[in-house]
Length: 460
Image 1 (cartoon, helix red, strand yellow):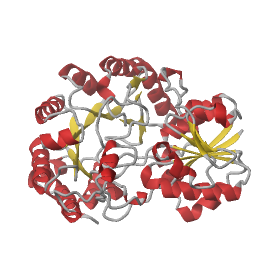
Image 2 (tube, helix red, strand yellow; image 1 turned 135 degrees about the horizontal axis):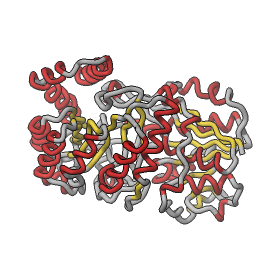
Image 3 (cartoon, rainbow, N blue to C red; image 1 turned 90 degrees about the vertical axis):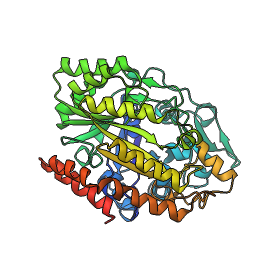
Image 4 (cartoon, rainbow, N blue to C red; image 1 turned 30 degrees about the horizontal axis):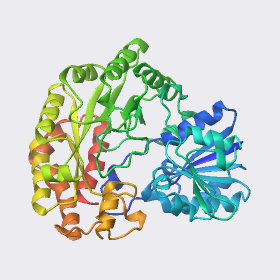
């Protein structure tokens, strides 16, 4: 089949800090599906409209110029679902007989809403590699696991769940050759060297956080450290990549594979700098030393709140002492720390938000990210907020981490929004912090990051 996979554009609104500091990273889900499709002989293209900075007004022309297709696959998260629907309609006009498939987090959790768009033929729920192969092979909908669709009477049918892929090493390398590899860059402050790109070494998350939907399941699966190192080697040799940002929820969960990755970099002669996300309860001094020795320069920890009550409310199984210890150990290893916090959680007050800001200043990490708690569809937080009548809107464009969409009884929307802006200013405009940043402005990449970050902080 001739198949086109589309990553819609994501337009961030004014007032969203991420407008100035956000990354543009490859749509790895589409790239993996493209790789398994190509392995089976299908002809695949990827249109990464977000990376290419296409506007919605340009999409019809950009898609039409790519030729004719028998299947269109569109990925969608909640903030971009309206753009995804529009692309489905454009695709139907361009290729009336094509099969239009939509997948990603939002269609997975709200398949009936997604199929309310008449241009969409079928929804792929959850992990998509096996399911997309079944669709491309022309199997009848009735025999394909992991899909939702309308039957001949217009009734929506939800087939049984697709099994998760146990052996991630069985997957081919993502189809990087189909992506605009020169268009990707990390978040401000996340990379030491360019060009940089993101990767994933794991799938799944055993956490119980109420604000997260685990599209890859609750069971954590891992690729071998050596296989990940080999992929890095390919990216470096083929595209000149100098830095990797690992976007796994908890890169350090499998300590054996972290060490295997480091060993693999040595064996393959890879000169790499890299960063990752982690949890404060999954690291130790030995692993941090090995990571540092093999190019890791930054770790992001999700700390979320300094209030024990708030942490319990959102299902975050961590405490402040563990956070302090993890940050201290990471700094001692010579690795910079980024810390992520959320304000506007269930039970939040002005006092608890201030506790979180004070704790962020106490930890004094290299970067602090403050997001507004956002109850995305499919999460426990969304169900809780809807049951209690706290949702202010179900206009999904508003769900962007920078706009409060829960009217909590303990703190107002206006107070959350004001504190969101104030937290960035209080943290980043401290004399101590500014002096440290100025001392590190030694290279062009540092200057660019500082400019992007400062624009975010001062709200321009």
